[in-house]
Amino acid sequence: MNEELLRTLRGLPKDPTLAVILYKQLFEGRYWALVQKPGGDLARMLFLTYPTRDGLRELPVFTAQDRRLLSKFSTEEPGAMTAELEGRSMWPRMLDIVKTRECEVAVDPTEQYGIRLTREMILAMISMYGTAKPSA
Image 1 (cartoon, helix red, strand yellow):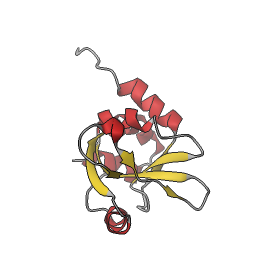
Image 2 (cartoon, one colour):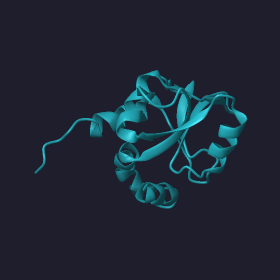
Image 3 (cartoon, rainbow, N blue to C red):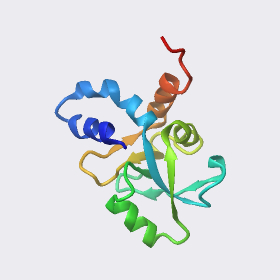
Image 4 (spheres, one colour):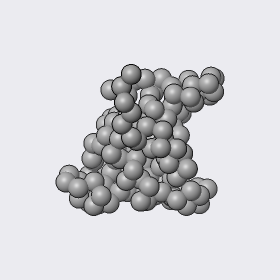
């Protein structure tokens, strides 16, 4: 499902030119996140965040349901449940939560290729891909 996105994330350290396609793949991806009150209205979902060593909070989202950290959090955090989300609807919701240098989205945290996204990165992604473009 997210194979192209994962290929890009894994290849980014060796080939920075892959960044050109990263935002589109992130925007169109499918994710799993830990929330309270899953289902229903995305605007009402409460997302799990946690403190990091560098003083920020991260809101983790995962590109596959079998990620180690997702399993760990879902069993250790009372009331947390897994929600499957489409990037197109999830990213605009993240703008209500994310504040650069305070709380940022972590895509596949603890994985070697994991990436942290700031509010500005999410805004850029939404402005580039968030509106329907006429077909050629």
